[in-house]
Length: 442
Image 1 (cartoon, helix red, strand yellow):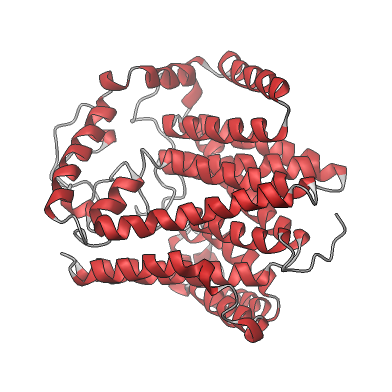
Image 2 (spheres, rainbow, N blue to C red):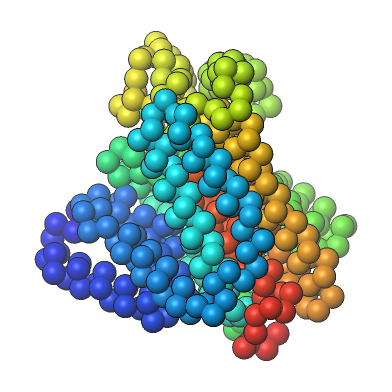
């Protein structure tokens, strides 16, 4: 898409200025704008927008506006941010010993930005209404990606032919570097939205919004199918199972899941069913064989630098000679580099361990475990006050589990989606446990 080139630069700067002013005055709206940019990725649809740096300006305004709003309690609940501080320190130490200090510095800045974002969200979202509104922004933004994937899949006639990498959809391309360009990355982010749509369909008012959310959940399922991603299917299964078991009595949950997966396999086109069926034969799959080679080499490399790792962001450079999944399934010979000169780790956790070493990996896990503990507190203590509390905790936990489940076969320990979910968990715990005032009656 080349929309920016057809619009006067003054108009674009004007829109950015409006977004900045809104973010300064109304940080909750600023969070919504920032997350729309982050999830919908307009600057990946049209890379010319990158020259204007909209996320940077909105992010700065959001940080200033959020800090001003909580100026009298800047360091409130600082203990909750100790895991993030430990991760930042671990990344900084690893970057000092990095084989690529420029990459290390970039990752360190990314972790700092994510920590600042979580701090703002946790302090700015005070009510259920605000929290739900941000969930709507995320779900609708990802819904746009799902629609784009469905359109691309229909254009390529994906459901009419057996799967092959010569015919595969891509997300917003960027300059060959779009965050969700790869079909598996696109499936992972769409699967994250399914539990959120389920929550909104369960709790939204008025009733018409529940219908919209139910349609959004169906859109997410279809969007995941058009990616033909097996990791996306696994993530969808994880999310749907957690929501069903959490929302319904045991018997009804089992019946729902039986109907859901039965309908999925009976109604889905045969090419998709055949692709998913290959999950049952992992050791015969060329792509899995490639992953096993990467993981085996990574294990050797971890033993070389077990404490501080090779440096944040270095993993891709270490494993460049191994062919990509696309090359493997297409029968291509191993290449020295693909068009980006990089290789995916195909395992978020292994990448973090190889990059950061044992100390950094422990901090990385601490961040996730701390978020899960907060979810447990919300589910245990908040449910006695209102069923909404438990439903929200289950949905956001299911989204986190779906994303991390897919990440067992994908990379990106420093990307934003699961940190955004952690930010929502922090905010939800404050709202549910009564440290924020809910202005909307339950």
